[in-house]
Image (cartoon, rainbow, N blue to C red; front, side):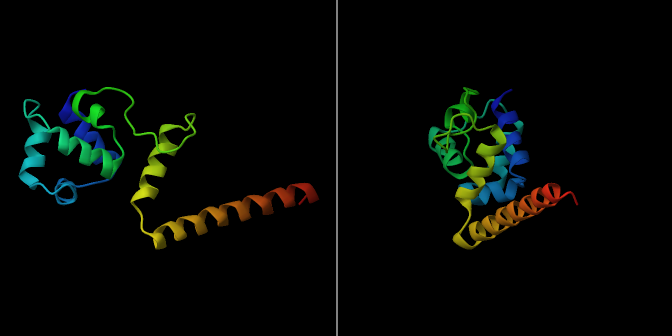
Length: 123
């Protein structure tokens, strides 16, 4: 996987358009387009670091494909890549968005508890 492929994967996994990534990184859309097409154009260390900060992908992975791919957010090293990506997304959210996610998670817990209670009573 080359740098172009890794950037395409970042776009795909984060459901980003080139224009949105360009805006968030402070570069032009045409520059992002060139990076996606030409493996000979090398990303700068500072832009790779910005990608790490914004999207949670290690700068060394973005530049050279060196594992680990994702920055470790949690102290729990056993987290799956999906868990790590979810945590990276949470870090980007404002307080209101995080509250909405927590409310959703709590509602899932409530549903699970009600199913457990139904199973115990034989319903």
